Length: 170
Image 1 (cartoon, helix red, strand yellow):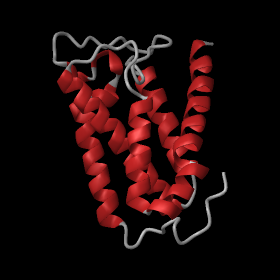
Image 2 (cartoon, rainbow, N blue to C red):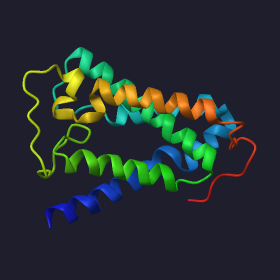
Image 3 (cartoon, rainbow, N blue to C red):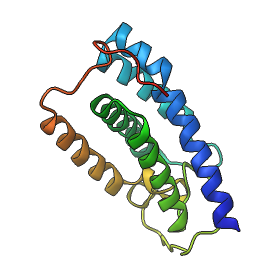
């Protein structure tokens, strides 16, 4: 029952955030500011919206968390621009949040219900493990995101731009 509750919460949260950060306003911003201007502006907003509330982060961990959140927004935005659909960004957002929770880690600094496992992080630095904030604040997650972003940029022959196309229906 708790897992079902979290799944419903994660679905709703991912849908809300994808509509908020990659929906109509983002698509209009792409038309007005260009692809990279809109991605940078919404990446900053996405990062600020996910700033830690209850989780205490030291400076290195905060830096890794903000960089990871910003890169996540860049990646999700590029996926939207490449596919012309919010479906894949929504699915990835939901899956990432669900996986973190299921493995017993925090999700953006919150732990709503216990996961399947109880990770023991020991006294390893927070920037390495993500600490109570969750895996998204860890250096390994940041390295994976840099790799994914590099792959996305290298494999985009000429990704469609919403500046040249009508907004994606949501």
